[in-house]
Image 1: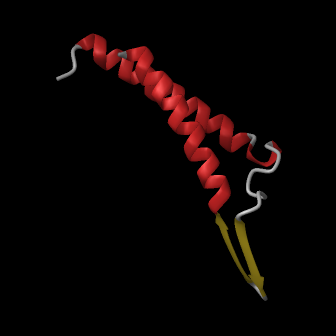
Image 2: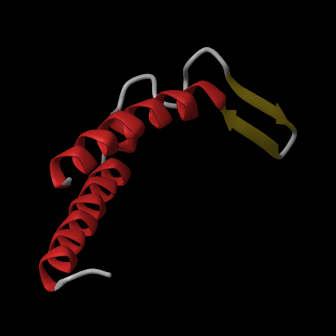
Length: 76
């Protein structure tokens, strides 16, 4: 399974992702166009609001795929 060296790399990787997610949640409102792209569906009626960020999810998925592929190639 994992040796002590592999476990150390894994913990560092988890720490980096936690820091990145923390920064993302902190500055979410300051990122331009995120959640307001064409393809994001918003529906409001009375006190009900429905939001489905299709385009935002696709872009975030592409960026995460590229970043994770780069990170895993570094650790290979």
